[in-house]
Amino acid sequence: MHYRRASRVSVVAAGLTALAVLGLVGCDSDTDDTKSAAGSGPSVIAPGAPGEANRTLSAEEAERQRAEDDSPTPRT
Image 1: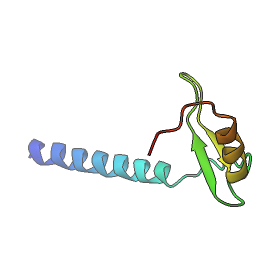
Image 2: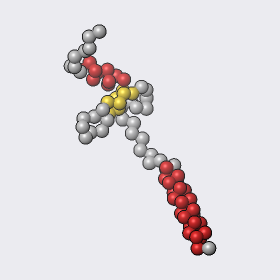
Image 3: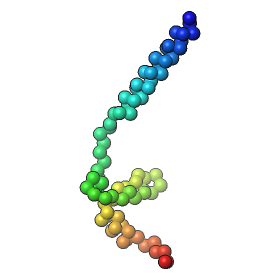
């Protein structure tokens, strides 16, 4: 008899844990990070330097940054 009670307790505990996890996953922190033009058109994600966050650039900002890039172009 004691075995069945322990089994029920573990099933109830697992169910409550699953319910808590599903409840937390459904929460939204409501932190819309719409900096440059992320919400108004096409955007480009530029990787940051080591230890820094990525940046979201608009298409125009990415084109300007590409024009300023002095890396060699590949030969075709």
